[in-house]
Length: 259
Ligand code: NAP
Image (cartoon, rainbow, N blue to C red; front, side, top):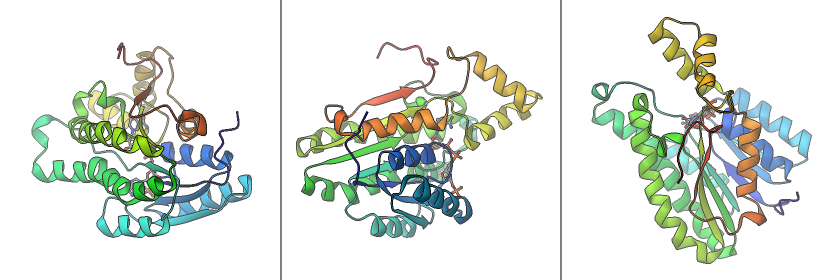
């Protein structure tokens, strides 16, 4: 399918690995020029070079931490005038309700709620002026089915979801569509780290922790970054113009919900 976005320009935050990289790859394949970002430069520069050579698109790589004010300013300057914004950042650590104090919550809110909001606030006006835009926020299945050990993530991402529910309806009249993609478990470094915590807690190997988790998913496997990226690229497509303010779960059937 021609997604109708060839020649558009996208900012994909936190995109040297994992789900952000999956989105950058799928957008590059659709002919979209990119601003990519991560804190570490090696993987970022390598992936930017690969996407330039495989897809012939322009890719600008911005090395910084998007959760800081300085990092946001740097990325926003490079991304002025983008048609597409994909927000992403690392997820907060797991733990027990009694582990977390105010500073932990502020850090999680900064990374997973206030950072995407800052990017939307800075880049939505340019999309509104052009009468076309797409925003995809990478959130989590925890928004629909909160995960007990991820209280920081549950809290921050639910806040972002509430913000998007209102904002998406306010910008839709201008041809700008905001939606959230909710990953269930996908095979990335983040999943390895979560499985590592479970393995340590239960005294089992990481492979066993992974197999145990996969067995609870109707699809009996983890998702891939390519599947995730394809869903993101579709939400950014011309054809997705009637999808507004949705929370789309990609979880292999793990969450059993009607809504
Ligand atoms: P990942 O494999 O660990 O990749 C994270 C990417 O983001 C890397 O490119 C990393 O590069 C970059 N990054 C992290 N923090 C950053 C920051 N502050 N500023 C700029 N770049 C940053 O993670 P993932 O699995 O793709 O997860 C992406 C998001 O989806 C996370 O918020 C995660 O919690 C959420 N999620 C993932 C899953 C899953 O199963 N994978 C499920 C639910 C939710 P650098 O380290 O070089 O910065």
